[in-house]
Every structure is written in structure tokens, then in C-alpha cells.
Amino acid sequence: MTQRGFLTGRAVVAVAASAVTLTGLIAGSPVAAAASGQALASVTWRSCPAYSDDVIRTLAVTDEQRRKFRALLGRMECGTVSVPLDYRKPRGRQITIAITRVRAVDRKHRLGSLALNPGGPGAAGYLFPLQIASMSQANAKLNDRYDLIGFDPRGVGYSTKVDCPSPQGKGGPPEPGPLTKETAKLIHDSGVAANKACGDSNPAFLGQLTTLNSARDLDRVRIALGERKLSFLGISWGTWLGAVYRSTFPGSVGRMFLDSVAPVNFRLDDFEDGHAAGTERHFERMAAWIAERNDTYGLGTTAKRVRTAVLALGRAYDETPRHYSDWEMVADGATVAMLAIQSTPDWPQVAQAFKEMRDESDTAPPALKKLLGQGALQRPAAGAPERFNATAGQAVFCNEDPSRLGFSDAWTTYQRRLARNPVTGRAGSFSAQCAGWPLPVQKIKVQRGGGSLVLAGHRYEAVSLYEWTKQMHAAIGGTVFTVADDVHGSVLRVPDCATELVSYFTTGRIDRGCDGTAVPGK
Image (cartoon, rainbow, N blue to C red; front, side, top):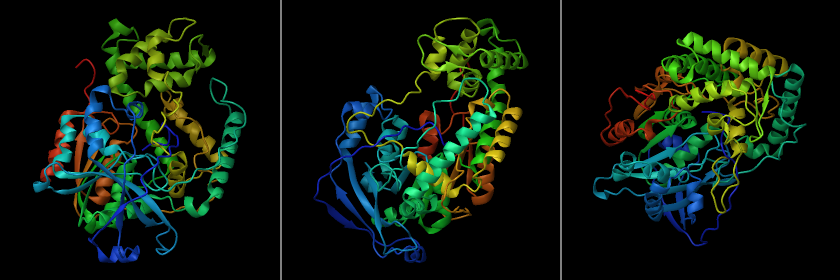
């Protein structure tokens, strides 16, 4: 789960006007169905959008994987499910949830439907089954006995959505170097104004963008598909959605696997504090790795000496920010901190960047450009589906965030975070977060529910801390599956781990963990 780093964009795709309606059978908890006004639910099946190779490449599908992706695309079915905008008014305004289905290859031994969510909030999942199944042979086996179900949550992609007005920013980006209190106040005031303008622009719709309502929508999808139970695979924010779904509809869940688990009690300020502490703690692993290779990088023979060298580098770049002739970004202490939070696969490039940044040069260090030089968003290819909806992401976060700090508290929290995390603290930017959001806080509490559950926690991860997995386990039960790496949501990307995941969905049994992404040089 993270509030930064997603692509945004809009896409309008024409679909055939004719549709076939399949009525789903009421299943699971009749009480839950009646409470949601679910007398009947159906899927309106439509023609699927067509996608060019350029569009497919934007979905992180390699040229080698594209043939498999297109084969899956040829088998994919597309449709929509109608749900209430406000579940307290089940006969009121209806909106649509866009779904996809790739039917199980082995129909004779089919185990049911498996819904997939990549994270967010605000991330699209319409094509996620294809992205997963084309990634590796291990992942493809998920489709052997399960219908793979993709969906765009409410407010995202092909589902009903709205966009907030573009914020009216004041001035350009902050000056390089340490953030001043005066500049921070301007950033906070601008964020508060943007949050208020967004929330006030369409409160009737935006106020209904919550994880609980997405869970209710998911159960509508289950009913429309005619499934007695629905299995679920969620990553990042998708773990929170899964936990809420299982807590709300305990009789509707088959098998559930949650990777990189969200915190049980969500507050954005606590989330940022946890992320900062996690990155600082796990920088020590990076520093030890670099120290073992002092002959290559020359940053120190112990983790302590490497840490001292990196802190000195950050101070030097704050005192004299570097304006490179071939790079639009200005490198300062925050740039050094951003390098220090990278995961294990990037450690060789990070260490090389630290080494190169110690030298004077008019051009940007090659390793630095390779790691951080792709920050500019590329224009989406024509016909590309929306990958992330910033309005939905902000609304879901802020509707559930009780912190909403005023400037004084936000500035104090930020300064404390920097003091506690001197190496990596600057990697987190100062913002208003949800201050000024005008809609009421909607708290959600998870609890133990039905169905089989696996919680995959990454022992060294800083985005979703391993201790959050333990806390979620205490709150909702299940089995803890420990991944011995620091890479967010890596289970599907590591063949040995993916094999364990597929085995779980096939048999209901799983070991206690996997190695995850390997540390370079071992």
C-alpha cells in the first residue's frame, strides 16, 4: 500500500452495444445479501476492448510475454455488474463495476473463481489476470483450475468514476536542499485547498469510495458469477480489501492469499512513520552488503562506515545541490535518501551511484540516472486502459484516514521523522495528506471470518512492514507465510514462491515461507 508512485490517465474504449445477461444465483450469506439489497445480481457481458502491442507494453508485459498475453486476451470475457452507489439506499443510483474472466483450462476439475487485485487504492485490475498468468509458467497454473477474475474497483478504469478538478498549484517545486518551514506551510495550505476542492466537487460519489463498499461490490460480483464462494488474491491495498471482504462476508470466502499485508488500524501519519522507520532499519542490510564490497565501491569496510559516508554525501548535496547538464532533476540530500531506500535487486546500482556521486561532474552519474531518471510520466498509448485513478486513490485513503493533521502537527511529525531516520527520512516528501478533506471519516474494523487464509509478510520490507503481518494475523487469523526478502508484493515474481502460492490455491495447504528475491552476489 502506498500513496505515491502510480501512473495516471484516462481511456475511453468503445464496446459493442449488444449484451448477453447471465443471472447469478444467490449464494453465501442471505442476511448479508438482503442487507445490501441484493435480490439478484447479473453480469452484462460485452465485447472486450482491443489493445495494440504498444498498449500491452505499457502494462509491464515484455516482448517475450506478449504472445502468452495475447492468447489469454483471446480467451478473456468482459462485462459489468450493477451495484448501488450507496448500499444504504440499495434501490437508489446504480453504478457499474467492470470485470473480466478467463475461464479455467481444466473445466472438469474446476475449483471456482479467483478474484485478483493488484493494490492501490486506485489501481486498475481489469487486465491483472492476464498480466499475472503471462508472467511465468508457475503463475499460469493458477488458470488451470480457476476462472481468473479481474475487476476495476469503483471509481477506477472502466468502472463508474469521477475525476476531481486539477489542483491549482502555487509556484513550482520546492527549492533543493532541506525543506524550510515557510515552504512547508505553502505546500500544506495548497494541499488542504486541493483536498477540499476535490471532496466538495462530488461528495455524493466520492463519499462512497471506501474499501468496505469495494468489498460489497466484490460480493455482488461473486453472486453475479453464480459462485457459492469466491477465492481471492490481493497485493498491498488488495490485502486490506481482502481482509475487509472476509470480515464482512465470512460465508462467501473460499481460499484467500494476501501478499505484503496492510496495517490493521490505518492512519496515514502512522503509515508514513512505519515506512520511514522500516527503510532506516533495513538500510543497515544494504550498508553491510556495500561494506563487504569495499574494494569495488570504496564506501567503507563496515556498515557503520558506509552509513557515515552516505550521511556525509547527503549533507554535501544539501549544501551544494547539483544541476547536471543532461538531467532535468536537481540532486540534493533527498536524492541520496531515495537511493538509500531501494530494495535488494537494485543494491549494486545504488552502491555504484553513491560512488559516482562523490566525484565532481557536469553530467549526471549513469547509475543515478538509471535508478531515478525515469520519474517523468509517459503519455499513455492510444487506447490504453487507465492504470491508476488518483481521485479514487485519494478518496479511499482520506475517507478512512482519521489523522488529517493541521500544519503545526504535520510539521512536528515530519521533523521528528527526519530526526529518527537521518539516512532515509528525506525520501518521504512533506504533504498535507488528507488535511482539509471535507467528508466524514468512515472507520472499518476487521475481524476473524470464514474461509482459508494465508498472510504473506516480507521479513525485511519497508512498505508493508513484517510486524503488520503479525498484527493482522492476530486480528483476523489465518496462516503466516514468511518471505525472506524486502521486495513489496514479490511472491508472484519469484518462481519458487509463486509455485507455493499456486499449490495453496489448488490444495489448500502451504509451507511456512519462501526465500523470495535473492540478495545480489549470493
